[in-house]
Length: 199
Image 1 (tube, rainbow, N blue to C red):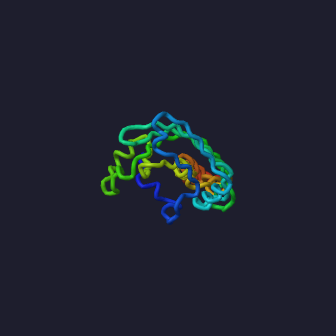
Image 2: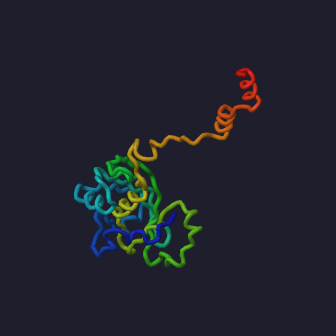
Image 3: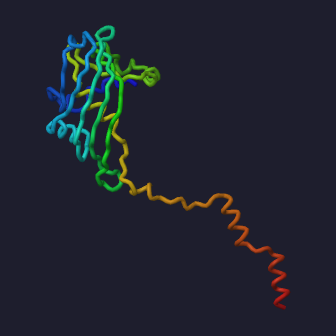
């Protein structure tokens, strides 16, 4: 699925010259198949932790297999690994999360990206790879890894045993309701028999 202008998020949209985690490589370097590994250091992880509202981010590493496509598009097969904590949406307590996932990207020159009004949403949903715009000269693998981290995060983290996970279904089924009605309501003829015996 295409992400459109996704790379405008975070630090870049706030006027900073570079995002919190940046690893830029020149387009010329992708003239042949290339494998790149990027890993965020403590300072970069702290910046990303604040950006995404995490309690902690102990690791973020990403491997990219890059190859040049047509019209300066760079195709990437990647694998992300991360270790972090988010706040439980119910209790606010830390919820540990480990990310270990593969993904596909296409780095597309920003000049070739469609305007928002020209985007065909249905066509994008059928695509396997996200489109990441770049300036036509340098590709930022660090920012791409950060965006993949954001996509992989559990959207509503819950600590085990918190909130809805402890909910017990107490609504009886239709069969149980019928059975209760039968046992709770005495047959009127049985009541008459009891009265006769008592008299």
